[in-house]
Length: 292
Image (cartoon, rainbow, N blue to C red; front, side, top):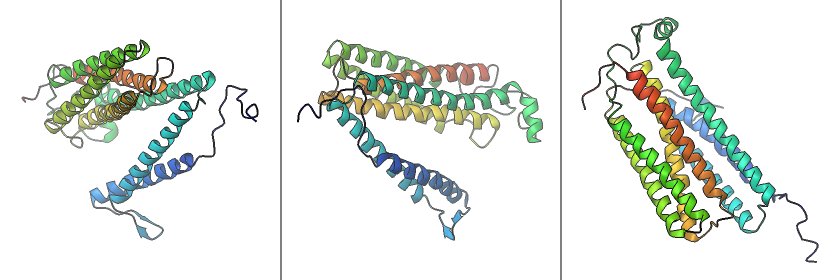
């Protein structure tokens, strides 16, 4: 009987799972909830099938379903790994999946950069399309005071570069079976991620321009805010890896969960460098700097 259940191939056929269906339901509820929340916030209404859905609760329900799906699905993946189902071929395909996911994230940021450079390189044409003089034909638009790129933005750049160093340290420690170095490096990375998010929140609160005031504010907050969201996600990703490291889940030969988190964090680092030099430095060159 033992020979009957012996694995004779490198692939893993997963058991029937509720997570794809539940994840789809959660994504649908999240999308409807997002629209309902924006209508609720703006004083409008969202009526579907004679039901008024204008409420922030639908969004929260969608978030809860998505988070539960993520927890359950990834818990099953970890369980499959511990049971030995992640063979060499399966592990390779997991890496391909993470690479494609990061590639899709790159295209998200391409959209925000495209919007920013379209408005900044052709401010006169942007004004004509919108039939308004919202830029004054210059960039940044007239009347806009920008953030000092050598103050908080530079500070956050140093923080992210340091975090990239500490997560690499943790990775090398894991490969060399240095559990103390792994935990220390991950702890420092998570703390640096929290510090980055705190500094960016402070910067947003004290920004001299708002999202809705100008095309500059809209493109600035969309690009940097989308990146800030990724920093929060990456910090949670690494915090989970830290908890798993404390439980002893990772070994030098089997640690794709940590490796995926490190890839994601390095991606966040690289995107920030582009944001810093294009939006904070180049686009604010010669503009009046707000006094903080």
